[in-house]
Structure formats: C-alpha cells, structure tokens
Length: 233
Image 1 (cartoon, rainbow, N blue to C red):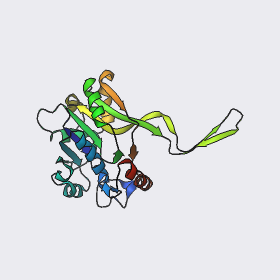
Image 2 (image 1 turned 60 degrees about the vertical axis):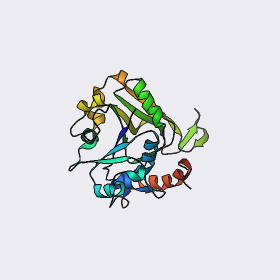
Image 3 (image 1 turned 180 degrees about the vertical axis):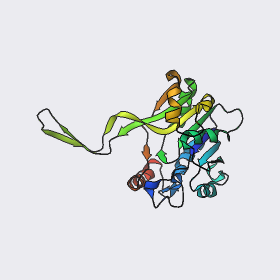
Image 4 (image 1 turned 90 degrees about the vertical axis):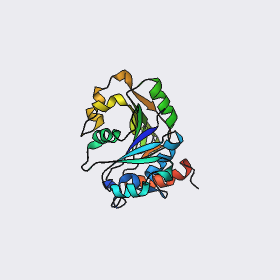
C-alpha cells in the first residue's frame, strides 16, 4: 500500500498576483481553504500517512500553516530548496525524506484542484507493476466552438466542449526504481520520462473533477465550483 506522498509546493504563481505575494501558489485560498487542503483531505482518506512538501518560494507561510500536519491528520515533512531545482530535481530531493523501505510514492503538483479515485490509481499502478503512472484528464476547450456544415451553414454552438485529447493532471505514482533516473536539477517530464519503458509507463484516465488554478479568472471560476464538488456548507 502507498503510505507516503510528495507535494510540489514551491510555485510562485506569478499570474495569480497579488494572491501569491506572501504565499506559495498551493496556499492560495479557494472558498476559504488553501488549494492544498483539498488535496490533503483526499490523500488522507486514501491512506496516505505522511506528506513531504517540496518547497522554496515563501516556504515560511507553508510551514507555519501546516506545522506538523496534525490539523490535516497527516505527518508533514519539508524538503527545502534553497535554489529552485525544477520539478524533477525537487522530487528527487524530497524522496530523501521518505521512510526507509518505501516502494511507491504518490506525487502531486500542489496548485491544482481535483477530486480523484486515489485508491483506484494506486491499485492500477501496483497491478501493472508500473515504474510511473500518470493521471490524465480530458482536455476542455477554453473557448466555445462553432459547428457548421460543408456549405458553411452554421448548425449551432457549443460552450467550451470536451476535446478528443487527454492532458497530464499533475498527479503521479512513482516506484523507487525511478529515483536514479530523476535529474538533480531539471524537469522529470523532459529528463526522465523518455527513458522509461512504455510497458511500465502508464496512464490512469479520470473524468472526475479537475481544474488548474493558474490565473485570477481560474480562481474566480473555481470559487463557484468547489462548494458543490467538495460539499462545502
């Protein structure tokens, strides 16, 4: 069973200023709760007991909020990057904080909102004996589209339809085998993923709720969604 997670929590969130002037991006609040709170709630329910936070920018705000992690029912540890190492380097450094004997670790980008079948993800990763499993979600068009026929006659409009493509949701499970393949500094998608054998590098498709919170507009839209999705009263 997977008992540990790493959350990448050092994002500056420059497009979310001024909300990120005094905190890292995962600490930005949506409906009165930090983005990372929504993730931690689900990780705990899935049996995650300790979480290593890979942090750099405004890490003091993160450490003060989390403290030992008791308020979220997990054990919080911190892997501090004095200079940013990139996502791959940050993951590799954070892995040194994991308990001895770990075999698989769940990893998330700390700045996305999602509601996923975490237990289903873990089960598939273990059943396939994967080195890396990536959650993918359908790509939603940021724009409405116009439908028309071969005579250029308009048939109708669709508001932000789902497109026939899948995108990386920023949620992974990595086995310990991947550790030596991670860069000390750099991005795992560029430096590591091309080296993995395809039969042990798999996806977990999810059509559940997912939203990237990258701009103030995203934040405004997320505020409207989370009350229903996460049943906040």
